[in-house]
Every structure is written in C-alpha cells, then in structure tokens.
Length: 79
Image (cartoon, rainbow, N blue to C red; front, side, top):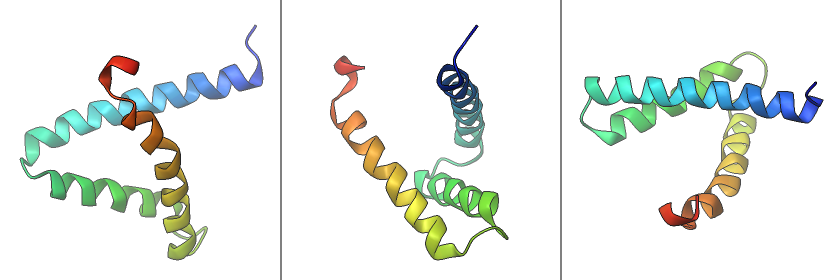
C-alpha cells in the first residue's frame, strides 16, 4: 500500500504526463513557442479563476518556477 506522499506523487506524475501530451498537441497547432507559453500560463490563471486573485496566482507560478529552475539547470545528463 502506498503512503499519502507516494499517492500525491503518483497523481502529480499522471498530471505531468497529460500536460506533456497536451504540449505535444499544441506544438502541432502553433510553431511559435511564445503562443504556447502564453496559452499555458492562461490555463494556470483559469485553473484558479474565482478562487484567488491574479496577484496570488502569479506568486504561485513564481514559486513553481523557483523550484523548477534548479532542476532544469542541471542539464539533460543529470536527470
């Protein structure tokens, strides 16, 4: 039986896989990375719309970026 932490991680990995599938589809729709980036950010704001203000949503995004940047700075051989 998995722990609550393991279950949360499994749920996250399922969501991540789906997001990467959606990204692949989006690349087929638009060749411009900036269009895809903006659309993905809009999706985050829409996810929280009505439950918190835009400034708080931006802080959530910033917090996630602060966690992801060190991971992606390690390079492809470190993953």
